[in-house]
Image (cartoon, rainbow, N blue to C red):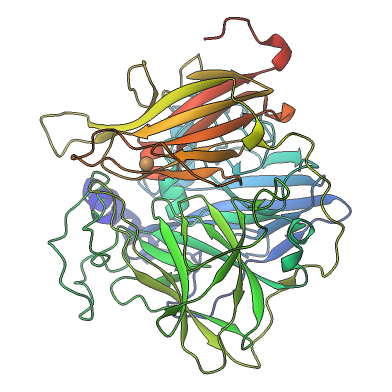
Length: 584
Ligand SMILES: [Cu+2]
């Protein structure tokens, strides 16, 4: 994407670089070098039931033309881990320090003008729009989504449809209580401005959140040292390099509809994006792994967030070449045994797929001293139209007796979680079934180089990209209901369905029932191939029972280039009492 952006904005790129040469500013979004030892994000713990955080978002154009984004604490540390207990209050003040990288040197001044004239903004340049209603969508607008949390979709909590903070605004306060029944596990925060999510997130704007108490659901992790790993993607550091000599020869590199390297089906070749792990880049073509030191044979809980903008992960730990057992205990912030006894608390696997936006938490036993070990991502087949996500190393795991312990450890003893207040989702009969489908279309069908539009459409409606100014939601449902959503994929690439504010259960995979009695908030929807007789699909049991999710929010593909390109819809959850007899 970088070469394309710079071609379009050739003059702007050159101008900005010249200005930086004349008046160099320190890079606020500094990153470790490839091969560095991993540092964990700084832990911020709530105290006496409150976590107060001052976070600012910055961007910076690197000498190679790519733009980094970062969340900073006042002391300059990046992307802290926000750690709260159920029932705690989060007070997060977000300051927007973005500058318009495509604009003239006086980025801040111009940014304010841009935001005031955004196509959905209703503001006068002299009177800034209310961040709660602005809906401004510009390169310097930002906001926060708290991915996975069951908090209300309203301003100052978890609304991304109207909330938009501009660089000219005062610090914007997010303030909400973590629900008492929020499952313990790994969640995350990231910006969610339609049209600009992808550049901000792939530039590095994301951070983890932990709801404490996983050991209360899963005693097997009590007392374990825990290691937080955030995997991000970014534009290629070496976009023009040939693949490493150790790789087999792959078919000629093709470009997909997003301008990224297309899936070639071999597991090798140029990736669509580079990866980083806790900000240590692992660039193509040689993938020098980052380093994790741990004590020989030590058992740890690894909490892994896929914060990539488009890259699917398929994680494995290998000693030598032998894949190791990983004890999966939580997916998407929810312990596997949340339904109490329906699923095993620990499921042993030798690899685990993680779509963009998803999280996995697993028990892993460190290698014996002297055994070479690697955390890797194996290739993911994203379909003929998808990105290339090849095999690559992420981190070498070095076992030494003097390795420092991770910065935190789960409590050794905790009270078990109270039983859930609602019947298990898998036991509830859905009140209705809705059908949706993912599809893609060239803006100009006669021009293969024209932009692609991305859609998620309810069956029977006309596919259209997400319409930010639409007055009516795409879907109306009622609080208290459980519905089944069947989501087809009519495109030739893998998509990742995600909905805000709630979790769902996977019921069928292309009409084959699956036995997965646990919750997710992001799931792959398999791609279509020409020889298939039917479109592949997933059937999801959607849980609209939580009273705090009344309001309007979004569902979308979590490949952010697709979301920015229109693959998003809105759902309004009406209060149960106000439900009309004849809905939609
Ligand atoms: Cu997608």
